[in-house]
Length: 94
Image 1 (spheres, rainbow, N blue to C red):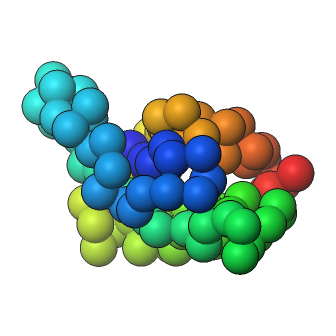
Image 2: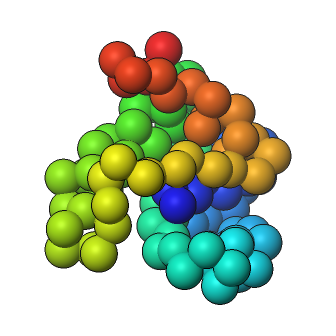
């Protein structure tokens, strides 16, 4: 699971809200990757989306090292992180 934290794109860090993943990680024997992204107001759209996409590409490229099946990679996020997760499509950030 590639997790993106909430915080209105202004607060938080890669560990914010990860406790919500604990049940899923145990239930599905999954691995979580969470990244920091640059925050507003210093870094406005599309910078957070681009940061999150760069982390997703890095995760895909290092899937073997991380023990991840790249065909089963799921993008999840809480609050603003959900919006950032929705900003990713097959061709990259929108």
